[in-house]
Length: 479
Ligand SMILES: Cc1cc2nc3c(=O)[nH]c(=O)nc-3n(C[C@H](O)[C@H](O)[C@H](O)COP(=O)(O)OP(=O)(O)OC[C@H]3O[C@@H](n4cnc5c(N)ncnc54)[C@H](O)[C@@H]3O)c2cc1C
Image (cartoon, rainbow, N blue to C red; front, side, top):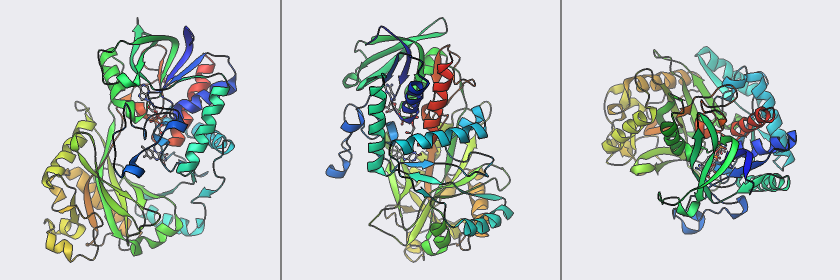
């Protein structure tokens, strides 16, 4: 281990990996160290398949930690862009820093790297352009946009292979890596970063365990969503400037496959986005699962949120998708995560700890849904544990109106989307990391301390996280 590094990158998710790749390419002979609290990619293994339940791996979860970060066990969908788009619709706010044209160039560049390291050449979502443009025109008339982004689909096994090759490439080219090591603190003197304090991950919960200091001129925090709480603590401890983030609150919508037949056939991952209704809040569909199943997932402190999946073998006759409303709060409130948790908690209380389900028609009629009504409903719920009730008791007026207006608008594009028997499950909430305030070089108000990727609220997704790393490297190379 060197006495002092030029650059330490904390985390080894896609943002860090692509930063390291680009630093090698720019050949600036910098001494670079990457640190991650998880394992090497080839040692990462999730026992859930074998054990049929989460065994809470110690010291850290293998799904979210280690080389390739949170994406290691995903089926690796890399979102690209359409030539004609004048905005970036998926993956966060990197383009707010560097502009849309530059972001597109970065996506091309990162995509090329994924291809060189073994990603599949086939692009999904590029057939049926004529059919899609007919639906898109209809949507525009209703004030909503239909987004169909080409996707490069790595697949879970392929993801492991691609990131495995990148791991080897980085280490073979002089970048030092340190696994199973948690960065517990950072070292700041006179407003300037000096290094990080580490410990073996097996002592992660031992607050008294002595820490070792490693020094560096520059520290890049690429800690992902997993490290967002830790980063939030660092921001409070060292007065690192943050800004109010957003929380997306909404429902999981379930309707017959028949209604969604064309959308499901023409598009790999269709997204509708719009600002309909009086509040002009951004509303979007997300995570569409043809012939899928609605699921309940338990998070921190027992909070139960709804989600949706589709399986290769098991099929239902329903499509489910999220409808989410972005909530941006203004002065003096800046606690989006707490707000979202409170909404979710109220809904959980209403459902006695379960997800609440209600028919669309009952909301219009101003009444709750009863079990006996659900039992006779033409749309049969795929989440059997959901409790029939009234979600309007807990979702705010603003959220509810935006969702209903959005459904009304899509119904004019996709006939039957607003069928009264369609089901709304709640709460579906996407919590994002608190945003760290960064300048256009991704530097915080602490000199030499930078942030990239999902953990600081800049990106959401594999491709954009990768791009943020490349951009970081280019800026560091010139410093
Ligand atoms: C199940 C799942 C499926 C997904 N599927 C997709 C998909 O198909 N397409 C898509 O675009 N996105 C997907 N995502 C999201 C995607 O994985 C992330 O957007 C992306 O990995 C973010 O990259 P990152 O580099 O910012 O952080 P991460 O990939 O989260 O990596 C952060 C790393 O930092 C390490 N770390 C954190 N704190 C510390 C610390 N204090 N000390 C040391 N190390 C630390 C962690 O161990 C982790 O390895 C999925 C995520 C999950 C969980």
